[in-house]
Image (cartoon, rainbow, N blue to C red):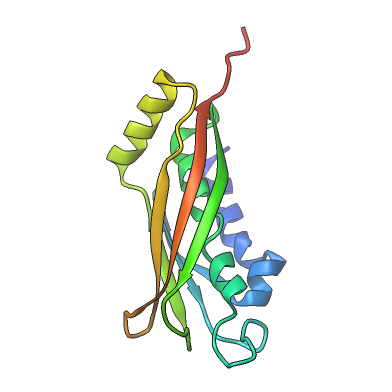
Length: 151
């Protein structure tokens, strides 16, 4: 897939109905980084006036998988396998999270997937408010393996 089409598709994800409804928006994107923001709106507020936990998780769901899919290429299978979220304080106003996988980590995952049958890396991201306070911590377990060759 061309890089132009990939960038268009990534910008269109802002209009994906679950993200649009929850107020989830992609800000800065580069090859290995996504910066995601979510404003508190009528559609993502819970009964006590703070961010709904499902929306906080939703804003964190696909990004590590998408980064690895892009970085490893089509010769590898990448799936989300498990996740957990820890709510640390009420989320009010705009919240954000930055998802990044360093190149050396991607190289290690590639080497391990090439050597073994599978690799299951774990990534953690903090969701912060406008004051920089951590309101939630999300841990994602991914599944990665090299596709079998079509000889």
